[in-house]
Length: 145
Image 1 (cartoon, rainbow, N blue to C red):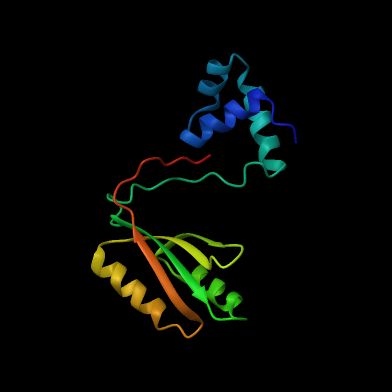
Image 2 (spheres, rainbow, N blue to C red):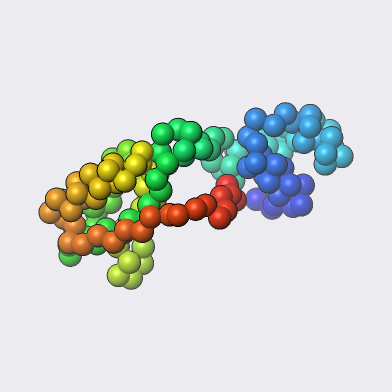
């Protein structure tokens, strides 16, 4: 699907506020509301937009500590670690990386005690040989695009 300037602007506006009324978007872009509605429906149909979602404020939602954790799987146990990670509620994002980069996770927890418990849980997993973790000190940018 071709993402022309109008589609890109619609995506940008919806990424900042998925609840923004189509009328407001149309007014700002100088097109009709039905044009915006048709374009959004097409973007969804073509799976350019996979879903409409929300972003929680970690501190206000009780998850004020963000850490980035890398788990290094034992040889031939990568899939086992990937499946484990998918089930952990503390993990908000996870990626299987190329090379010897392991499985990288963005983890959000209530406090440092909760992070320590999470790391201990991973350390006790036989499929994981090593862990590395870094705690985020402050957020510099968060974007949906």
